Image (cartoon, rainbow, N blue to C red):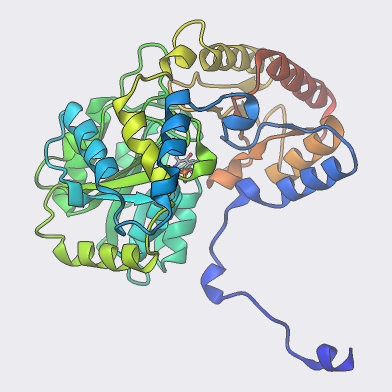
Length: 411
Ligand code: PLP
């Protein structure tokens, strides 16, 4: 014992000092402790469809099981050929002709490829423009790679679309790329072609890379149309498109995603060599899950049953939107895509100073777990995110409890 007291503390790397990923942070730890004590917590914090009764299409499961005996070895480090071909054909069907099989990398979810693509690019101090609010893995991965995430504003009063003027004002000689999350997590915004075009024009003028996170591209509501950034970037802007099976195909736990490179690849040969090095170093992505990709992309798009009128996701979004907006001092944009709402708590009514404390108080009193807005690098403590995955009854229950909590809340 004396010996161990005399020894120095074992500390984490300085590289992690600016790395934050609060969606799975202290709040979730607290919720887990409450669950261990026997409380039932309504978890509205993570975009994980399966626990809410959304099952993968049968064809995908059958195909994975059928291929399991053949999936025991490592694959090519980019991924199996048939899956990468399916990704190429998918983008061709969306009008993008410039992605070849070797431009596609399969990963253990999009997450792995996000960190890999930034590690391969950034020198210390170089900047990436990331939206605020954002899906915080982007900011965290830029920081982990030694870069600086510079946040451009998405404008709540304009359907949460990127404020292109703000974005332009934040470009410096250190800027290397722009992250577009479309459809957006956490706001649910879906960007029109004109906004994407303006951002791509900026990227062209300043020689920046577009990182297009399109993992929710098939989860669209109402009249929303998804425009792939790669269909706008063309031949002269390098674009890395990220998507996968976690959300639209409900197999987040299998870890299956891809990254596709398009645009002036000849100019990016050195960067791509860096990507290849890192892809080789992680050997390959989970092989059984790679076998799901061809079936998913080639098959019947069963997500439509969930997002069209009468579909579960659509009804849940509508119900959550209606009930949130009915609470005094709460307002919320209608999500046009993805699985979330990002409501605003009017600071005049709820003068919250610390939104993580707000979420913790809500958890303790009402046993519902949301994510505080500053976890998404949002600037003010006046928003939170909830997933629209629970069934209507649970949504009614959760928002009812939120309303009760707010009716007496004194920050
Ligand atoms: N990108 C966005 C915008 C997400 O919301 C998520 C998951 O929530 C991911 C990427 C990571 O997905 P994956 O399961 O493919 O790693």
